[in-house]
Image 1: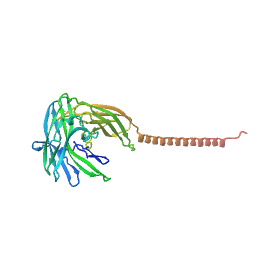
Image 2 (image 1 turned 90 degrees about the vertical axis):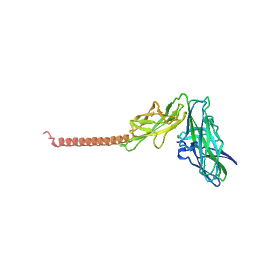
Image 3 (image 1 turned 60 degrees about the vertical axis):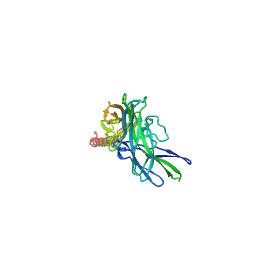
Image 4 (image 1 turned 90 degrees about the horizontal axis):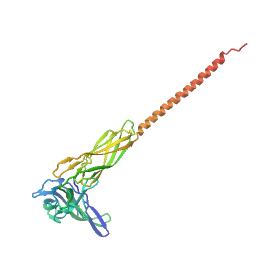
Length: 352
């Protein structure tokens, strides 16, 4: 779900440089943000909208031909008790390696889908009011087929003091994701690389250990993908992503590092590891299409140290028992031999 990160701040001596490093927030959850100025807390939300207001969409998504354009709207709601003028900006979008959607900060120039969006530079919204802002997406004639991500933000700036008492200008922004699918030849593709397994031993020899497999998923195609699949180690299998990790959406060209833990793995010295990726192709209309699975196979070392220590202990016990038995037998043999010698001497009769 798209989010906006907290703003970043850069200081240059007495000159303040505003650096916006926000990440998209969920428009379906009202996407509230706050920026403190000297007197008033400013809160606002940004959502996709139609002519009557917010329309319930989570993001702006359109499928367009090269050279085609479309108009759309967003709603900026001012939740503050004072009127606020918000700065509006569109920029190229991307997903971070942790899977969160983001867009270029203010000090970086967009070169892709962010340049396709035209909208006003600012909008003034009264306290408790909502303003509808129209914008246009125009796809260049030379645009390549596939999914192209951008974002639109509404931001405000405030002046705060840092720990040293210096005045710092902070830009806070809230926004939404804009995804454009350029119609044409759609070619989904994905690869799995960098498979790195590791084994965690359980020192209780009666319990199996666990394996953690880290690997990279790369979206080599021109469409959005969901990274789903399974990891099998030594006959045990775990599906990914977990509920805690959430859905793993990859834009074209994205690379994501995933780690999957597989429990109940017995250490059998050398174990087979299989990562099976079952990518899901996402479309603008919300439907999905499965791709052919992509697999990667490696082997991992899993030395059964607890079991070896138990065997070593048993071997030492057996060795000690056998050695003790041999010593007792030798002692008994010695005593028997001595008794026989004494018996022969006691019954011997001298010859007259």
